[in-house]
Image (cartoon, rainbow, N blue to C red; front, side, top):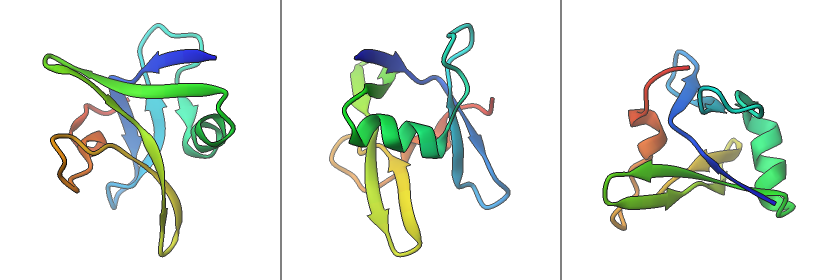
Length: 86
């Protein structure tokens, strides 16, 4: 299992996450469906490295299907939206 840092995300026009990215990594970009499968099957972990530590990326079952999300500082805010585009 690889522990994969995510520093950028690809988003659609609504801001929905389409892919996770880390420049220079052989796995990047990783599309949303593959990242969800990786996480659910325990193949790889994905995380956002912050100056104060790291935040795990996990899968959430929403009303329109599964999506990727982080919860930083115990808030419901999706910090993947704050990352630069890839």
